[in-house]
Length: 261
Image (cartoon, rainbow, N blue to C red; front, side, top):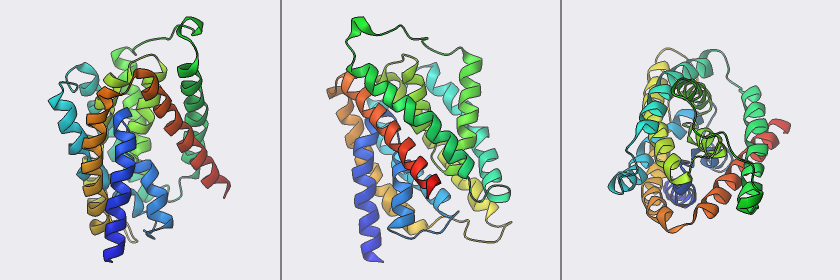
């Protein structure tokens, strides 16, 4: 038990240091570790991931708020859009979709090419790059956040790992997207973890989170997220885009491999 908690703390810390600078909580990469290494049952792994986001989120968010990066309409719209979606996603996960293979396929089909494109674009000289569409209008942005919230509620990924690559892919700077995406991830994870705890009272099976492991991973993520957010201003935009693209491509490849297996 002590080894499991110590391992969860270290895993959460290392993952959050790498992912926080680009607005990804790291829960998507922690999920296979929980399943394969720590043996968290399915679907309890989903609310455990959400619990990790709740505990880990304030570390990076405090640092971003200290730097003034959380101000603006983007954060508000992402949070308001994803909140109702994550509740719907949690209900779908428990009552209608215990094995969300179709969502893994869709996420892989979205993130793998998008991540590769972000990397390729970051490596292309500026004068050779095509112009991007820019920021979404308010209503499409809210609709996107709602859809991402549903997927996040189903698979316990919070939403930042999807919102970040999509918005950066449209031309927004990583430094602006990352704090907003993490804020949306934290808010939806808080609501989603609560929804799963309540749904566990109305359903059979392993639905409640693994509290101790989630808290251990989250504590590591709290420290790692703060360190990652503090590191972000020291990284050039090109490096941040490469990191985000690499994470998105890796996540897409991971989901594709899980589906094939």
